[in-house]
Length: 250
Image 1: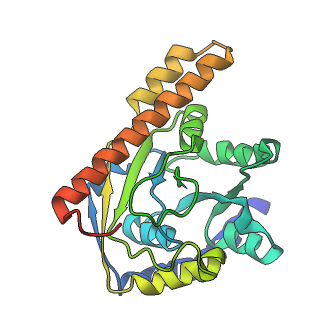
Image 2: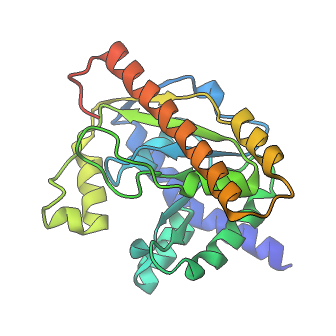
């Protein structure tokens, strides 16, 4: 009975999200290149560059599927924001400091990953980046891929208006920044490029290090997956500049 209640609640909480995303799509022109690379029959991790707080809404509108996002714990600071992030945006908190606090989040992620056809969304830059060029990636996506054995699919969002200055008052208020970014990108033609899944690399690494407990090997596996991800993103960035012009903003 509890499972039925939980499914009904999930359906109820999803209604505002679905309505808003479809309304937003009426005013934003989103072009997706290689959407077929996002699997329909198995789970995957979507690694996304992070320019504005509107990025999850744009991606949900483009993909048309439920995505569990992994977000900074600072977005879950109050009871209201915690409830909103979890129920309305399908987000789970990750703490940058105090990794022990992340144990419950990763436990939940691993339980979700056992389901069929689940998509996770993670921003490897770790923060909003309005500078126009990719910054160094954190290893969270690589770690999740290593632990769940799910492929990582790089998703590059191109030609976004970055919105307000990162040093402004609004930028320091996540909800306000997100709303402002949604408004700023209304009627914008946004390009989304989907890269090749980093799947064989991850599987090969897991196979190579299976049964080996040394920390150095574990770190090497994570580093190799993360390097492959960064390389894929650099190629997508170059492809976007070639197709749509380097003068277009992210």
